Image 1 (cartoon, rainbow, N blue to C red):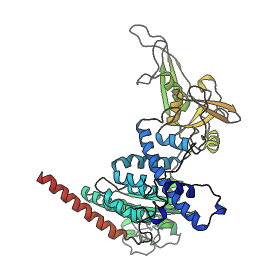
Image 2: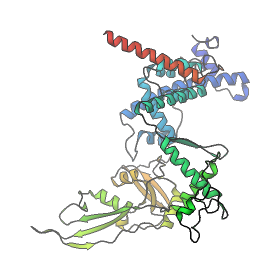
Image 3: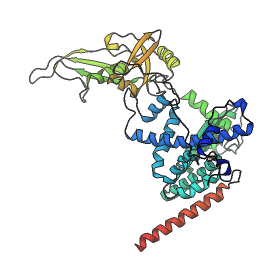
Amino acid sequence: MPSSANEASPTSKSATIFDHVAPDDLTTDEIGARLVGYASQMAALTARFLELLAEFDRRSGWGGEGIMSCAHWLSWRTGLSIRTAQDHLRVAHALPELPLLRQAFGEGRLSYSKVRALTRVATPEREEELLGVALSATASQVERLVRSIRNVDRHRDESERGTIDSSSSWSWNLDGSLSVKLRLSPLDGARFLAGVVRAEYERTRTAGDPDLPTEPAPGEDASDVAEKPPGHPGSADLWRNVPSDIAPAVVAMGDTMQTVIGVPEFVPGAELVVHTHDDADPHLDDGPALEDADVDEAACGGAVRKVKHAKKRRGTRGVVLNYGRKRRMPTRKLMRVLFERDRCCRHPGCGRTRHLHAHHVQFWSQNGPTDPDNLILLCSAHHRALHRGEFAIKALGGQQFSFHRSDGSTIERAPEVGKPAGWQPDTTIDDDAVLPISPGRHLDAGYATEVLYAAWAWKAQQSDGDLAAA
């Protein structure tokens, strides 16, 4: 039942909440009421948005012009970050299996934050109880409850399998510090602590460290050194206490990995050998035939050597006429220039930062120069899509580029987003629908989790009993 604050008719509600009165002309209470009302409308509209999004993805309506996924299309077309778009898709595809949550969401009674959390643990058998808790809890309380349920689920799964999976998470804090959380299996944990001990020893030892191993003195052998008591100069017993604060040792471990293990600053693709014949399709060395687009992609995105064969005669193998030179990749300095300029795949809305190729807008095989005015970074997926003709790139000079559809029209870098003409709020949504039933009530996540699992166990027993009776 709507509260007394919602007894106004739909017409008057729409007129009072969505009348576009300037904020300066509203009282503080009126602003607060509108914020709650807008939040309820946003929840209901987001539910409809996700319903349409799931159907759009099922129909693959996002394809074309180098669009790699529905999340990519959503990020490009609506201005969401790629991670937010992926989260929206996950929730959108989960909701059809959860009719109770979907209905409450559509009525504006559950916020997107609550639904996003609940869909991580909700199942058709669990959603009734979870919905009851969520309607009475704040979003932060729901998040805490879901974390507790996920922990229980993980421990139960690990108990059934008899193994523990190592996991971790990290995030940058607002003050610029980094928070890292590790949960390691016993063996992985022991390996980690062994590394910490070694790093701490390396970090803190000095030339006069009594535990520093030394070469056997004249007349001594290794067994004499090993038998010396701990702490005695020349003892082989190293410092081996795990420090209570392991942060400095972990940083030392990171420094060691940075300085000891050398990796290339840029890693070009492996060399490809492509054989071409006068009377046959090009093919990989001892491999399958290639289309022209594949040959162009290989020549553009990695090191490739072309082997030219003469026309085959009956019973003979084509003679090698030319063992072509290896195609020269952009220099390391030039790759740095490209990376500092582009930072990611330049296809509109993509933003991938890994497995990037330096693409020659005017193909290298067509005498395209290897310079910043003709080079642009593309991810491997978009590089392949370009060579297959799904879109095109034009070099505009001054290191500027434009992307175009197959019909020649420009693919906008960031399409304009605006409110649809004639949009009106849903007058069936209560102004305070999104408010918890009992705001401010304390939620004991441990107790709530215990009660929920007891209820789910009882439901499972009842279901098993019904099946046995049938």
